Amino acid sequence: MNEIINYIRGIDPVIMLLLGGGLILVLPSLKPFLSQVVDLFKNFTKREKPVVPPPVVEDPSILDLVKEWEEFYRLCKKSGLDNACEKLDEVWHLLRKDE
Image (cartoon, rainbow, N blue to C red; front, side):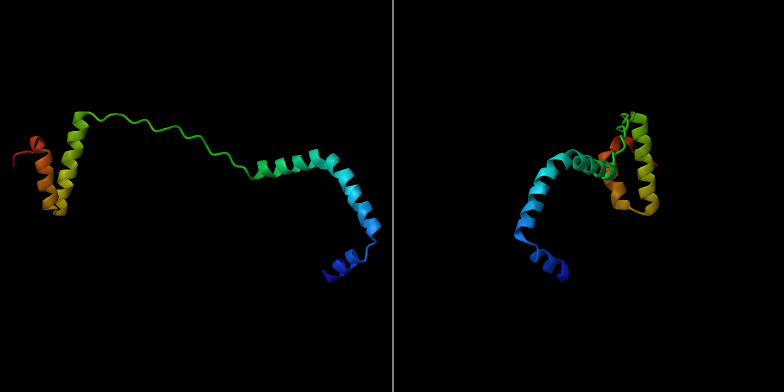
Protein backbone atom coordinates (compact mmCIF):
# COMPACT_ATOMS: atom_id res chain seq x y z
CA MET A 1 0.00 0.00 0.00
CA ASN A 2 2.88 2.34 0.76
CA GLU A 3 4.30 1.67 -2.69
CA ILE A 4 1.08 2.85 -4.34
CA ILE A 5 0.97 6.01 -2.22
CA ASN A 6 4.63 6.75 -2.98
CA TYR A 7 3.97 6.17 -6.71
CA ILE A 8 1.03 8.61 -6.70
CA ARG A 9 3.10 11.19 -4.83
CA GLY A 10 5.85 10.83 -7.41
CA ILE A 11 3.59 11.55 -10.41
CA ASP A 12 4.19 14.86 -12.11
CA PRO A 13 1.37 17.41 -11.48
CA VAL A 14 0.89 17.89 -15.24
CA ILE A 15 0.19 14.18 -15.68
CA MET A 16 -2.25 14.33 -12.74
CA LEU A 17 -4.11 17.18 -14.45
CA LEU A 18 -4.23 15.28 -17.73
CA LEU A 19 -5.57 12.15 -16.00
CA GLY A 20 -8.21 14.21 -14.18
CA GLY A 21 -9.27 15.91 -17.42
CA GLY A 22 -9.50 12.54 -19.17
CA LEU A 23 -11.74 11.19 -16.41
CA ILE A 24 -13.97 14.26 -16.69
CA LEU A 25 -14.32 13.66 -20.44
CA VAL A 26 -14.93 9.90 -20.16
CA LEU A 27 -17.34 9.71 -17.20
CA PRO A 28 -20.38 11.28 -18.97
CA SER A 29 -20.16 8.72 -21.76
CA LEU A 30 -19.98 5.87 -19.21
CA LYS A 31 -23.02 7.09 -17.25
CA PRO A 32 -25.62 4.99 -19.18
CA PHE A 33 -23.49 1.86 -18.80
CA LEU A 34 -22.92 2.46 -15.10
CA SER A 35 -26.64 3.08 -14.51
CA GLN A 36 -27.46 -0.23 -16.25
CA VAL A 37 -25.00 -2.04 -14.01
CA VAL A 38 -26.53 -0.41 -10.92
CA ASP A 39 -30.06 -1.35 -12.08
CA LEU A 40 -28.92 -4.91 -12.70
CA PHE A 41 -27.69 -5.21 -9.12
CA LYS A 42 -30.86 -3.59 -7.77
CA ASN A 43 -33.05 -6.06 -9.67
CA PHE A 44 -30.88 -8.97 -8.55
CA THR A 45 -31.20 -8.11 -4.88
CA LYS A 46 -34.83 -7.01 -5.09
CA ARG A 47 -37.27 -9.81 -4.34
CA GLU A 48 -40.95 -9.49 -4.95
CA LYS A 49 -43.22 -10.48 -2.11
CA PRO A 50 -45.80 -13.07 -3.05
CA VAL A 51 -49.35 -11.82 -3.22
CA VAL A 52 -51.41 -13.53 -0.58
CA PRO A 53 -55.15 -13.07 -0.84
CA PRO A 54 -56.87 -12.04 2.36
CA PRO A 55 -58.53 -14.88 4.23
CA VAL A 56 -62.24 -15.28 3.82
CA VAL A 57 -63.89 -14.83 7.17
CA GLU A 58 -67.38 -16.17 7.50
CA ASP A 59 -69.67 -15.11 10.30
CA PRO A 60 -70.28 -18.08 12.58
CA SER A 61 -73.84 -19.24 12.96
CA ILE A 62 -75.46 -19.45 16.37
CA LEU A 63 -75.18 -23.24 16.24
CA ASP A 64 -71.42 -23.03 15.68
CA LEU A 65 -71.13 -20.60 18.56
CA VAL A 66 -73.06 -22.87 20.92
CA LYS A 67 -70.99 -25.88 19.86
CA GLU A 68 -67.73 -23.99 20.49
CA TRP A 69 -68.99 -22.82 23.89
CA GLU A 70 -69.95 -26.35 24.89
CA GLU A 71 -66.54 -27.67 23.79
CA PHE A 72 -64.72 -24.93 25.71
CA TYR A 73 -66.86 -25.54 28.80
CA ARG A 74 -66.23 -29.29 28.58
CA LEU A 75 -62.46 -28.76 28.32
CA CYS A 76 -62.50 -26.42 31.32
CA LYS A 77 -64.41 -29.02 33.35
CA LYS A 78 -62.04 -31.78 32.23
CA SER A 79 -59.00 -29.68 33.20
CA GLY A 80 -60.45 -28.89 36.60
CA LEU A 81 -60.84 -25.16 35.99
CA ASP A 82 -63.88 -24.68 38.19
CA ASN A 83 -63.48 -20.89 38.41
CA ALA A 84 -63.50 -20.63 34.60
CA CYS A 85 -66.62 -22.82 34.44
CA GLU A 86 -68.38 -20.54 36.94
CA LYS A 87 -67.50 -17.44 34.90
CA LEU A 88 -68.72 -19.14 31.72
CA ASP A 89 -71.97 -20.00 33.50
CA GLU A 90 -72.39 -16.34 34.48
CA VAL A 91 -71.86 -15.10 30.93
CA TRP A 92 -73.64 -17.88 29.06
CA HIS A 93 -76.30 -18.72 31.63
CA LEU A 94 -78.95 -19.39 28.96
CA LEU A 95 -76.78 -22.05 27.33
CA ARG A 96 -76.17 -23.89 30.56
CA LYS A 97 -77.46 -27.44 30.59
CA ASP A 98 -79.14 -28.55 33.75
CA GLU A 99 -77.29 -31.57 35.07
